[in-house]
Image (cartoon, rainbow, N blue to C red; front, side, top):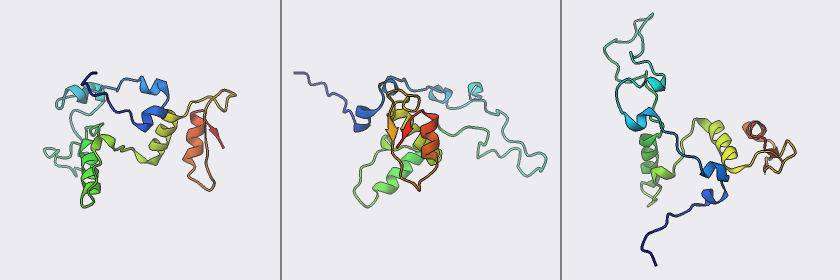
Length: 150
């Protein structure tokens, strides 16, 4: 018997679409470089302009508005975990937290990851159930991803 510990498979991995599980994570320039001009990121290497209002000090770029934020949202995830775990003995870890750009993104990703398309085009795809009145993006995302609505 081997002493090698097998990775734990979570519930989500058991029901996610196989093609999603076989994807390799996207690597961006920030994975390999933390400073400099990242041309592949389509960022403004010169920083924000203060023209025409001259409202910005051209030498004070502390906010780094020309840079995209960290795609892994490590800082906000850690802060959310610290807040949630404080005082209640919780043990939520940053790698178990999803941070999206609003609920639209989260709904779309959930449908793309867990629902097989094809139901509305006569195939064997999956369906979601919604109960009106509800948020309109459930229907929009189901239609975009060719998932039946029940």
